[in-house]
Image (tube, rainbow, N blue to C red):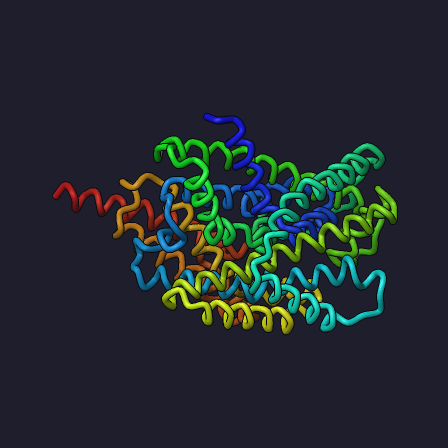
Length: 425
C-alpha cells in the first residue's frame, strides 16, 4: 500500500469529519460531565467517531454513491432518503456555521445582530457557490492543520497546568447523553453524503488500483482518521472537564471554547482561533450548499437553473435559521436527528456487514423496524414524551432515547434465521 496515498486519504477523511462546528460540542460536554468525563467521551466517540468511520468502511465496500446505501430497501425509499438527508444538511448544519461565526468572531468585538451576520455570510456563500471558487479548496487544506495545532496547544497546556480535580457530574446518564450529543456533529450524515467524494477522488488519482486494493486503502485510512477523531474529541472533553470549576454553570458552548482558549493561550491566540474557525465554518457552508445543489441538479437533467435555485433557497434558509443562537439551532435540530440518525446508523451497519447477512428481505425488515422503534424517541424530542411514556416504558433502552437499538438487532438476528430456513427449505 502506497504510504503517501494512505496519508493523504487519512487526512482527507479526518478533515471531512472534523468540522469547525464540532469544536463547540465536546468542551461543554466535558464541562457538564465533570468526574464522569471518560464515560461521556466514550458515548460521544461512538456516534461522532466510530459510526462515521463505519460509514466510510461501508463506502469502501460499496464504492458507489449515496443512493447505494438504501437501494436494498427500494429505489423510491433510497431517493426519498437522499432528499431528506440533503434537506437536513442545508437547513441545519449549514446555518449553524453562521451562528458559530457570529458568536466566536463577531459578537466579542462588534455590537452586531445575528441577522446581519447571517445575511452577509450567506450572500458570500451564494457568490462562492455559484462561482465555485477554487480558492476555498486551498484554504480548506490549510485550515484543518492550523486549527489542530491550536487545539493541541490548548489541550496540552490545560493538561499540564491544571489539577485533575473534577467537579461532580451534572449528568444522569453520561454514556447515552454522549451518544445523543454526538448526533449533533452530523458526522454520520457526513459519512453517507460526502463519503462518496473520497471514492471519486481515489478513482481519479489511483486509476489502476483494483477494487480490493481501494477497499484496503480506504479501510486503513478510516482507521487512522477515526483514531485522530477519538483523540481530539476525548481531549476536548477532558479539557472541558478540567475547567469544570472555573466558569459559570450556564455558560454557552462558544463562550466556553473562547474562555478556555483565552485561559490557556491568551487573547491573541483566541482571536486567531476565532478567525480560523470562522473560515472553516464558511468553507463548510459553501460545501454543503454546493453539494446539495449538485444533487438537485443531477435529479433535473443536469439543469444549471436547478443548481442556482437550490443554492439560492439554501442561502435564504441559512439567513433565516442562522439568525438564531447556536444553542437554539442545536435544540431545533434534535427532532430531525432523532428521526434520521437511527436510520442512517442502521444503514451504515447493514452495508458494513457481509452480504450473506443482509439480503434485501433482511435489509428491509431491519430498516423498517428501526424506523418504527425510533418514532417514540422522535415524539419525545418534540415534547410528547409524557403522553407516550405508558406505551414506551417496555421498550429496552427507551429511557435513554435509544429504544430502536435492541429491536433492530433482534430484527437482524430473527430475519436471518427465518431467511436461512426458507433458503434451506
